[in-house]
Amino acid sequence: MTEDSSASDYDAVWSQTQASDPVLLSGSFADQRARGLTEAYVCWVRIEDGAVLDALSSVRTELGSMPGVSLDDEDTLHVTLKLVGFGPSESGDGSDEVTPVELDTITRDLEAAAADTDPFEVSIRRLNAFPSVVFAEPHAGGRFRALHDRIRSLDGVPTFQYEGDEYVPHVSLAHFETAAGFERACSWIRGDREIRVPDTTVSSFELASVPLSEYEVEDIDVLRRVEL
Picture (spheres, rainbow, N blue to C red):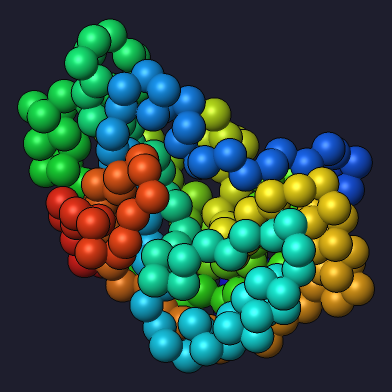
């Protein structure tokens, strides 16, 4: 398949992480919860291919055996295309909050944003890490970035950190609870970053409402599933 245009970005992330201090797990949306927000609206590609999940299971087993490393839920493994925003708080004064009317507009416009995008092949080739998370690299010839940019350009969609030129598609596998866990995981990844995962095809993505507190997969509300 075509080499992903973000391959050099993955190399840069790995190099930067080796020189960074860990960012420890304290709840992914802890600061938003503190502001009274209860849900995040996320466009994502859920990993639903059983062969891919099976292939990642050995990696997850190894990571899960490491003290100080916390596994992400297998039922919600995904590639984030775009954080669309947050459900409004009682104060309603946040620039990243999305009103029900704005959400309806964004949900409707998602179809147009993906109108000329065909299903595409994804190859998960290597492990990598941000200072906060171990992830697998989904290479797709720049298709994830193209969808990200389309969604990002929709009216009413806020801009967040790590978007645009800083956007790096990834499948989060585990977060770090301790600095020692970070060192263990990075040392293990450094030994052999290559992984064997069957190629898969992305034919849709979802706009989902995800609780900002701990949740079960049934607590996720899929607002729109967009077929490519």
